Length: 243
Image 1: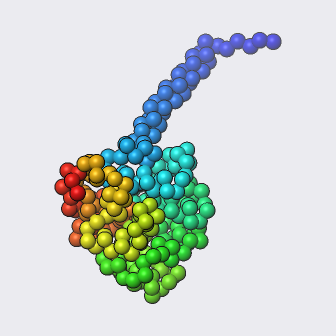
Image 2: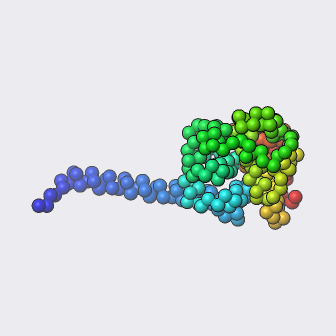
Image 3: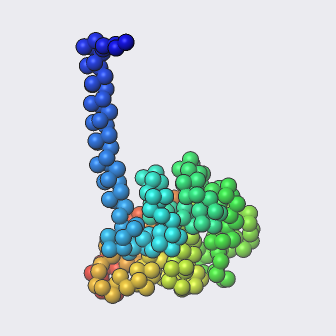
């Protein structure tokens, strides 16, 4: 037995199908645009500055495939300082990246995310055997006093994770990288320099040594004196690619 649809019902079904199709068509370019905006993470030639180049090297270091990384990127409020922490913590804990990001975007400070996945704060001080001076000297002293009970700011955690990851990438000791921050040299700059980026005469956006919006300060609470707030520290470079 064949049932025929009334003209009115047929029009409603057709309209719903057209709306769904339009929504899918609109979503496809948006998804492509989001994917395109993060291409530098997977292709170093697309990096516009030292910080993007650093993030590219971080992704390579941890070897997490693009399909596992891309879905979480739009959810991260401050990609440059926080992506290295998420990747570092995923690797250290053995938890999937999306689990780490879910905890973070759920409102937890990084120190609580570390606790939730059972990673002690000790891991971000490996290789820093003495006070490195500002901006991490106070955090180091607090950790030496309190050990595993240490609770650090998001800013310090992002910066110190950046030091640990930078060490793995370029082989410079964590102490030297942490100490260099007080002298105006970011980890991103050290990684780009070691990677030959500066030797090609390419500028880095005018923030060769003072802008720590890569792995530096993640919660917007900078330390002053040119160390910035994770997005706009005062750079000392001239951006002309000659270093």
